[in-house]
Amino acid sequence: MKFIKSVIQEMHDVTWPNAYQLRKDASSVIGLSVFFVAFFALVDWLVQLFLALFQ
Image (cartoon, rainbow, N blue to C red):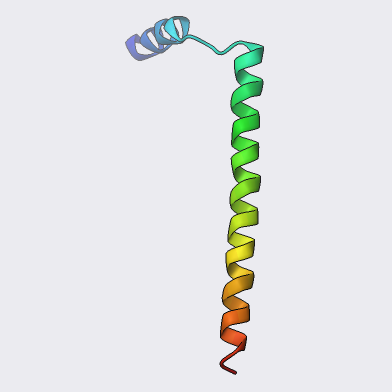
């Protein structure tokens, strides 16, 4: 029971993000994910082209 009380107390002490901060953070995560997908797709394509030269 002591554990549950401490969890509840900790949840009251947490600073939750507002809507603006949540949108900002979510858009950063989505933007970086799209960037890395494009980057690794480009690198993969270039490596395939390079390896195709030796076949």
